[in-house]
Length: 480
Image (cartoon, rainbow, N blue to C red; front, side, top):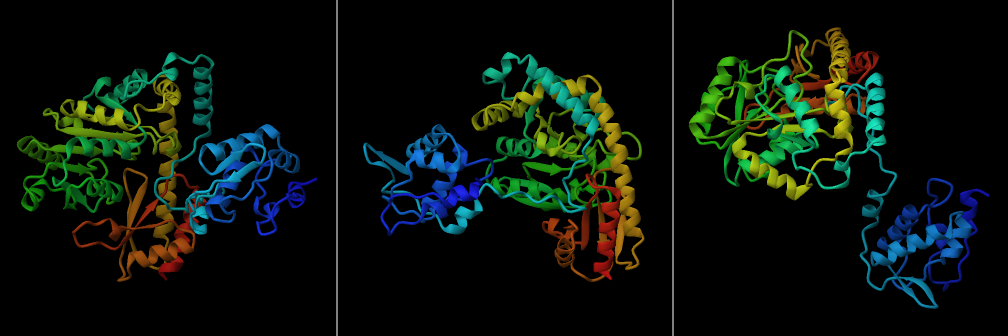
């Protein structure tokens, strides 16, 4: 008998004015409703008001028999409903909907259903990593090796910085690959660079403090700074990057600045040495902080990665953010912050108060990936794939007959900027592109106070070459 047949045969003794439970409990995945799913289904009915206060619930024996699950599972679901205040058990009478329960709008109940999924990214979307089957096999074996002999770090609360082995591996990598001046004590393992940015903002910036940001800028950084209560000042970016002299003219007493000097987001400009030294000098003179987000420096296609701004700072005014989301995959949720010693205690206190410490399960395997050379090999393969993807997208865009885009070919990173030559607005093109299956972003939406430029920000990492060429052809059709 199928689950649907079992459901329609559910018969309960109940007053005639109550709803038919057999039509209200949905068909759930699996061979029958599992404990958590049965609990959630009944709870949603109660919250939506489909089952009134005081209504009698089906018996656990009836649910177990009709839906093909163990009675223990049904009993456990009812115990959860009772513990959460949605039901109450009456000795000798059964289980009833509680007299007072929250009622949510039906739309709200639907929005939190278990079947909601994030749709796959459209070609040219940002923030998509390139899968590597060999790396995934290696990482799986490293995880299995660690789980076969689990260490004591998994069974107690650990250092807010994260595991020492991973921090040492990250420090060694940053010193050799990026010229960062650091040791393991300064490194905090985070759940991505956004968490690191949030910790630094809360440690270094007080409500009302002025903060510089590149204009245009990374929208998530702008949102984090604005939500902290800081006064965000956009400093225009030119061919040399952010101009500290212009920043001082706009706001001389800023408390901090957020920059992406190796590969400015979104324009892709590399900050010149002259500007880097001027920015460090400004921070020294004003006892201000520089937050350097080095989000995709591993992907440089012409020569080795540039030395980080942090590695040039002898005054300990630069905090450095990095992530494994771009080079491995975002689902790993591992990033890192190199925190200047004067800010370290405050950042650690904040970390301990929020999520105590990072997850320890993947730390050992990730440290092994770095220490045993697997990460370096993965990076070489990924860089070749992403380089080819960049070339495929550029070729597709340059073959356009519309002549409406001025494409800047990046020497680093995972995205490019195609500026609009026509007078059309980029936000309108982005909306049409989404409908056509292309995940472009509007360049104009990333400006703070400077005159917005019209263009498209297009990602190429994580997509096959033919997908990118097809996306370029769809953009061509839209622009024509």
